[in-house]
Image 1 (cartoon, rainbow, N blue to C red):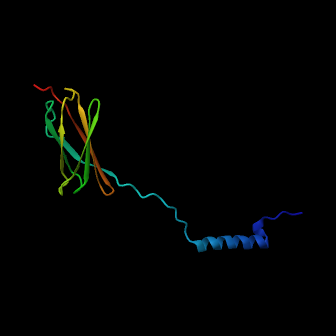
Image 2 (cartoon, rainbow, N blue to C red):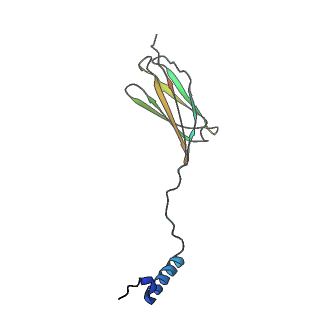
Image 3 (cartoon, rainbow, N blue to C red):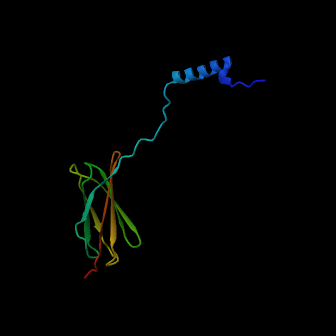
Length: 134
């Protein structure tokens, strides 16, 4: 008794041809892929006073973000985080005021910035060191 593979039989050949034809008629198979995320861009931020006295104000001056982008800054103090929000100008600039209060003198406070407009995100950071009130 001889063994034959299905492709060599008359029925097997027809089945294989039918399978190939259906595949060709169906067209290419598309796989849904998530859209590529926009790359994060760099912005710029500078404190108006990098060594502000306790109980005074300093401003985080943000630039190089998109026109009218939503800007969020976060100051990371020793025991807390303070968040501020603003909308950038048409020129891509924003200024956010921080009241220093009784922040620990000499302890660096990191300020992180995230700005968003559409699918574009900008990120940058800076820091300041409060000094003791006179």
